[in-house]
Image (cartoon, rainbow, N blue to C red; front, side, top):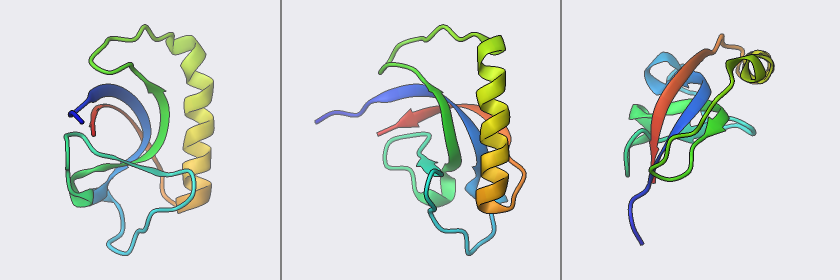
Length: 92
């Protein structure tokens, strides 16, 4: 067992921007920015792109624009909140 990190593009919100009573719901993941991060220091959202462990991943913004738009709409529908787009690390 080891600690792994990757880069992710996420449509969502940081836990500090969510209501205090927000709970994990279907299709919205808790993205821990570092290994064993508490949920109150995590990003909650829909993953659009994820790199391999410790690797860079080529992205095409023209291709990603549609999935990002759809994810923003889905996040709003599921949570009632307006999402933002983040590039973050994911540790596990």
